[in-house]
Length: 225
Image (cartoon, rainbow, N blue to C red; front, side, top):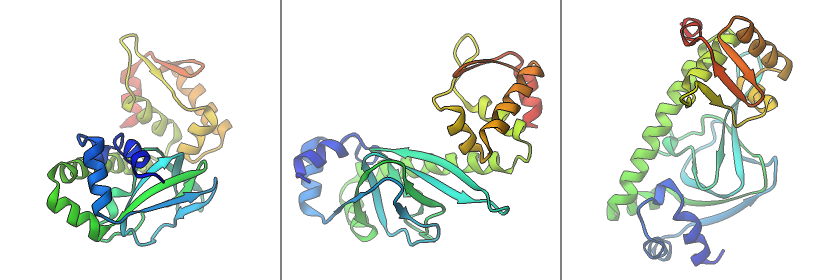
């Protein structure tokens, strides 16, 4: 990939935030990196693989999946370009916490942990960006862990709704289809739809296609426990 094009893509990444295109080019010219391509459904990493490089998605998107004790696959999240993959796991135990699978054709940029340390020693902006990014990821994973510990599907959905941005009219916009939401919760689409309907029957919410109106927030909070 042309270094000028690569810099144009990386300038949008949270890891390189605040750096100009010319500054990114200077980093790319000084330090080694790799560009890799994957086809849809390819495994980019397996759970427990060593995580020895910073990997940033340049094109496409991936999903993180793990298997629960019952053997059911649970999708943790989708990650889109130009965000990094498993950035919080490069140091320490440095193992991928989930399987990472390409949702589409994907192109990635990567630099090794050793090179990353050298860059951090020279560029404080990149260091601060990286620390902010892994802090945000850690908070997300903590919330996800709490979310997955709920046993009841209605409780999980209530917690999810309460975490979403809400308009002044108490409307939550869902940016996923019911099939995608069901995958997120690790259940079938009918089970997810049935629990939504139960929340509506309970008077907690009102369904409006890809929108949910919160009717009784206190009831949702009581379900959350």
